Image (cartoon, rainbow, N blue to C red):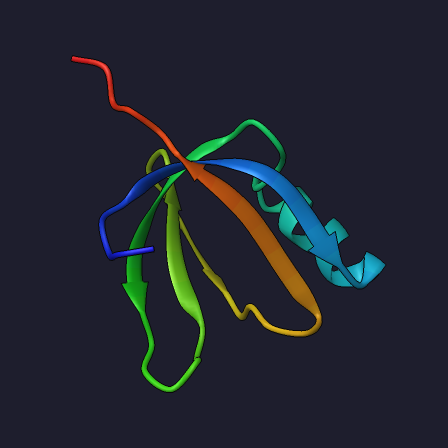
Length: 73
């Protein structure tokens, strides 16, 4: 997804510990968030949930499935 995309989390999949940690940080099914920044070469991404910014390394250990979210005016 492109930077500044607003999405809704549909599912979190991966190793139990990694999935539990991102849920503790506020990323769980149904949450609307925004991709702030993406590091080059498959590095971590920065995700904003409200005013909170979270750095997450995605890959084989953790996958977050999202769908586009239409912002309401």
